[in-house]
Length: 78
Image 1 (cartoon, helix red, strand yellow):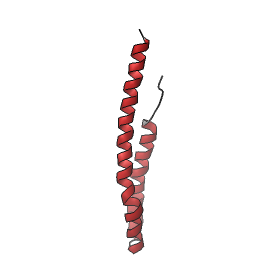
Image 2: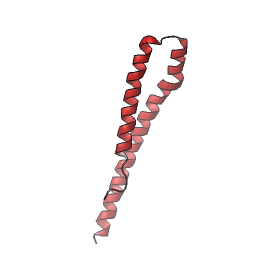
Image 3: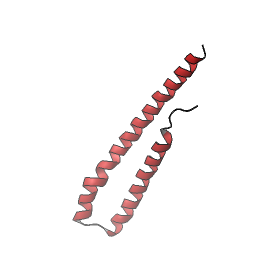
Image 4: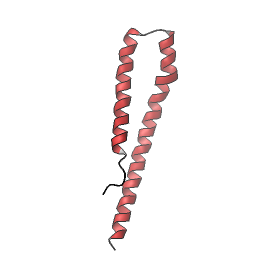
């Protein structure tokens, strides 16, 4: 029995980040002025590495939880 599923949420977050990038590129085709550049610098640009870093952390946490779950399962067999 799986106690925690982090991969589904992480996959949704990764997909949302990808979609944001695609939609932002679309928007830049028609919205290219000082305001759009400032919006990108203040909102989009900082978000991308933060989300990627979060996804990496979630991946590491999922590994730790999986290992802990296996350890608990193994010790309950004795």
